[in-house]
Length: 169
Image (tube, rainbow, N blue to C red; front, side, top):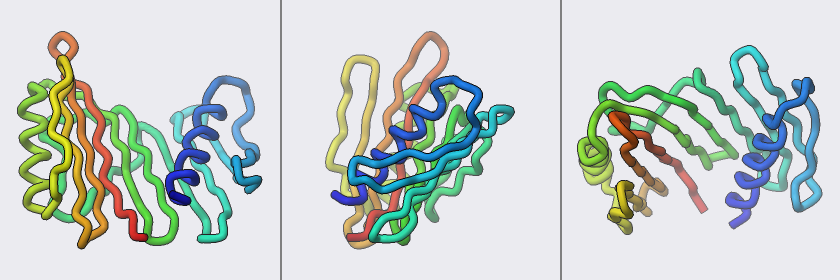
């Protein structure tokens, strides 16, 4: 739960920091009273943040050109265009949230990630279709791996979100 609060604080600070203004760096305070720092590169749109906690430094790096590094056995669906990649780390807790677009159908995109998740021993806990949106989510408790992907279509483009993270307790 502590990890979730830290990630939420970093994410909220990122949203606030990206809402205009000329300031490219600054500080913020979490709900727990911890102080963090952020820097935004206005040319690239990349944001970096850090927050000191009792468990160590939590960091966030987010932007279109942040390199995508997925766990072994996982890869982006062929032809994926990364809109944004957010990499979060705190000690052994790491995760990537990738917003993407593709010309492939949502079913094809989801099938790609389903095969990778199953091969990685992820126990799927959610397999849902809600309107035009397909979603999968699950975890591999042995590997402390959390996985979630969603894809939906708008016109000829599929857009989606992929989260893969290691969340040891």
